[in-house]
Image (cartoon, rainbow, N blue to C red):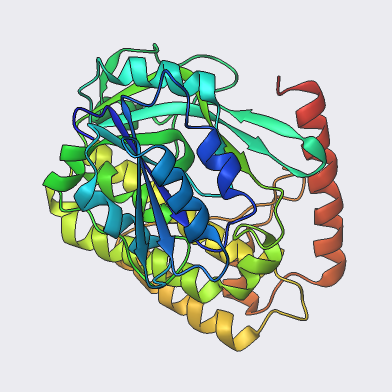
Length: 358
């Protein structure tokens, strides 16, 4: 598998029902020579390994299977990166898939790239066959010229992009190795580390006008489902703590513009964590003692690093900061106010989708 342009890492745990769709989306006569697929079976209890091995036998010059004991998401990335032969590397979850036509075009584009970070569009597939294309633009304006190399410092200084997500990004493999990239093992949600740690170090970025990743949000048990998130807040806390620790270890080497961007990103992650507790979590699930400990922990970290998270309702009608409210009252919003906020959020989101977002 020499001279591969792109390595695609597929973490696989009990995905026998969806893994064939994922793999089939990669296997086109125009992609086989320049693509490397590394399917990492993370101790699956179903037939995921047998399915992956069958594809490996049929496409031996494209697909490699790694079989390992269960270690959760980060362990699959850590197992695959050392053997990746592609000049670039991406992650593809086994319940998602790529647009095959966009993959062909992506490989052509990457063949002429030497940037540390590549950013593309992706499509989010929700319940009821709803689809939303996620682009890196501002107010439906194309901010950056596609196919042009930019200094990442300059892009972060602009402030148009608030964060990167796993689905849209590829990294130059040698760049990841040069920073000795590793992900936390044993917990979920470490794709956040994939989208953050390399941003501390990358020098250049290029945007491609391609919609490659097809993100499946319509699967029961998916880790971003609110009910699952509510049960895994401890894991998400660990990830956010790791981000703060990484920042503490590398802040002195950052430019002021990159430092400011990362501090805003950390504030966003704390905001998301507090939102899980203060807004998304059912009142019968919410445990005051658990959140109180979490609140103090991250409030202290934010104070230490001069980071200021806020959490306002999305409806922009009720302008009350949940975080400040909790800090004063030491309890969540009253049920009637939370109910009103929920109704207004849904109304304003519907109006935005219908009349503003194209």
